[in-house]
Length: 317
Image (tube, rainbow, N blue to C red; front, top):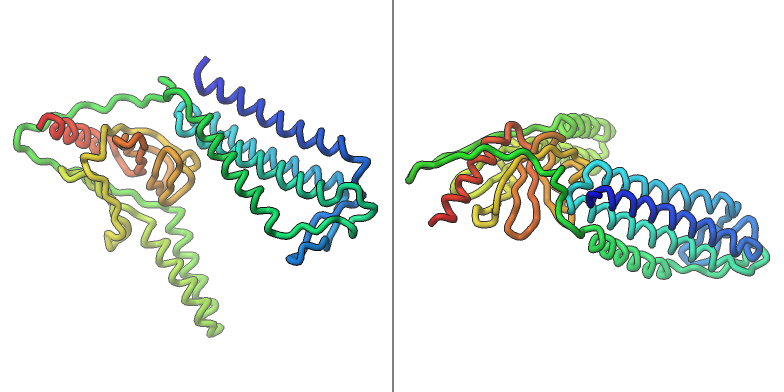
C-alpha cells in the first residue's frame, strides 16, 4: 500500500472520528442545555443572540466537513508528494482543534442554565487559547503527515541531459502570463472610475493602486544562467526573486494545479514555495534545503535541462 493510500485512509478515518466526537458531545449533554442556546457574545462577553441547539450542531458539522473534505481532496490529488500530505494533515489537525474548541466553548457557556440569556460570559480572550491550540494541532498534523518518501508514482519524467562544452555559456529565458489576474486587474482599474466620478478620491486611489499592482504582477519572466534562476514580474521587471545556483540541487518539470501549491501568486507552504500564475507545467527546483520551488512558466523543459547542466558543471569544479 502506497503512502498516499495510507494517508487517504487515515485522513478519512480522522474525519469520521472528529464528526463522531461532535455528535457524541452534543448527545451527551443535550439534557443540560437550554433550547435555544446562546450562540453569540458581544465585546463585553455577555450573550446577545441565540439559535436552536440543532442548528448550532449542524453549523459545526458543516464547517468541519468542509475543512476535512478540502484536505482529503487535496491529498487525493497530490498525496503522492510528502509535502502535500503534510499540508493536508496540517489542515485536518488545525481544523479539528478549532471546530471542537469553539463547540466546547459554546457548550460550556450554556451548560446547566435555564435560559440562553443566563449563559456564562465569553470574553474574546477565551478564543485565543483555541487559536493557539489549533496552530499546535496544525503543526502536529504537518509533522505526522510529512512522513515517508514521495511515492514513485509521483516522480516526473526525467529531463533530458544537456552537456555544456568547457567555457560555453548558455542562457534560457521564458515567460508566463495570468489571464485571471489580467482580468481582475483591469476590472479593478475600471471600478476605480466610479468613485472618481463621485469625487471620493481616497476610495478611487485605493482601487486604482490595487488594480495596478495586480496588473504589474500578472506576468513574469524567468531567466536561467550561470548565476541561478531569476524571476522578474511585470513590464518593469520588478520585483525580482532570485535563487542562486548553489541553492539548487536539481531541476525537473512537473504539472501542478494552483490549489496544490496554495493558490495563485507567490505562495509559501511548509514544504514548498511557488510562483504560480497559471496551472500547468512548472519549472520545479529541488533546493538543497529540502524545499521545492515551483515556477509556472511556458516550455520549462529546456530551463530544467540548463539548470541541471549548470549544477553538474559547478559540482565538477
